[in-house]
Length: 84
Length: 278
Image (cartoon, rainbow over all chains, first blue to last red; front, side, top):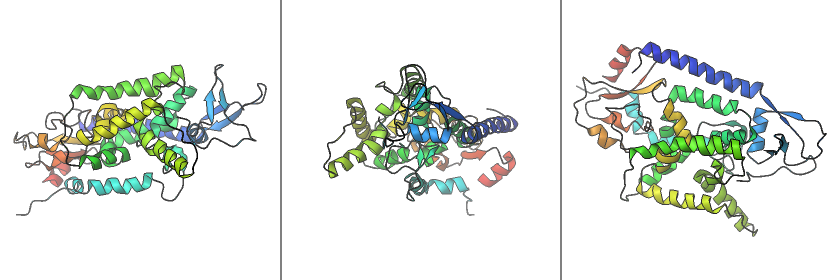
């Protein structure tokens, strides 16, 4: 069993790491998404919270070429529920 | 002389009420649908009543997209290092469901300890590797086999479709089979999902030995009466391995007669903790 100091050190390091990851994800991390149609259409960036919302309804998928693609267009309605 | 009981021991008798209070938070009574953020519990975001996103679902979906899930991992590390498996025992709605059904007076069977290792197989296989290499369409993708998803999202969705007179979209056969087995198992085994398959519990259990809140055994007080073995519903021997990977920290064991087991934390000096436990 670790000493109290050891526990405090682990707590501080991992706690800080968790907070850094969380804040980075919430504030700065984005993913490039390709629109559903048009290979040449410009990609757009989605923040991680928005990407979480999209995956929860099956709004984005990774295609065979490795691109993350939206599964609906601006004219279409977004899926309402998770496809699984 | 009146024996002073510490806060954790008092709280144990209120555990179900605390779980109920958290359940209200997860069931989105205000209709906030904050699905851009994860909660540290196992509650499907496809559920019509879900405030936050499920971190396991997010990790699996992001793995399928080949994107690192900073929010989900960051949250689980931060919460895990603070509380460890206390989340499983006190906060998780899926654990609460199993606790409630566990109150039904049916014969209860114990599981071999090695079955707990399946949780890591599910975490590495169905949550990380299969989505990464085969995408979200694979039949063993975690959301496609998850009983929480089937129960919290599939069943309400099918009910809604039936009430609206629409054709019912059934979940896949494997998911329904796992749901059926789960519903049967919860009557005869304590917390079967948490003990054998839960990938979120697998993550939190890894923090049990380093988390800020942890179980501590005072060997001087321990009378070796083995009462803690009887109090533990998961078949752990708390006085030998108080921070076992299988522990969900329901804290029932701290009710042992001699008071040898207690919930300690890193924020208080050992002397202060010992004094408060007296």
